Length: 124
Image (cartoon, rainbow, N blue to C red; front, side, top):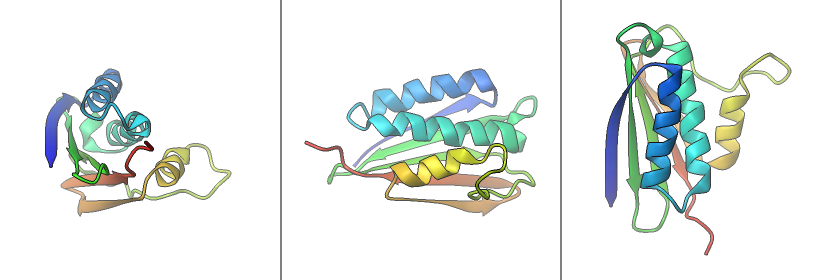
């Protein structure tokens, strides 16, 4: 299993850098970049990661069967991650993540949280 990890400052501008990092690690998984963008944006906007001096870490693993694991580690906070009720402003990102992945979830607590997703193997 191949794996990569990189930390980014917790700013909106760095979400684009995280997307490019994931694209370089998983060039045959076109949805990985979008999933990373949604998860990193949530970390910057809804956790202490977005405060001055905050960081988020991107972890990427490519498995032998072609599936991929992608995770964003943030610095925690009071936000509760989950899919919001349709019709509310915002909250569409995790619906998108759910549609593009085999599974996704959240682990951790207010001190540190990891939001992860498993991506299917690319089509031949």
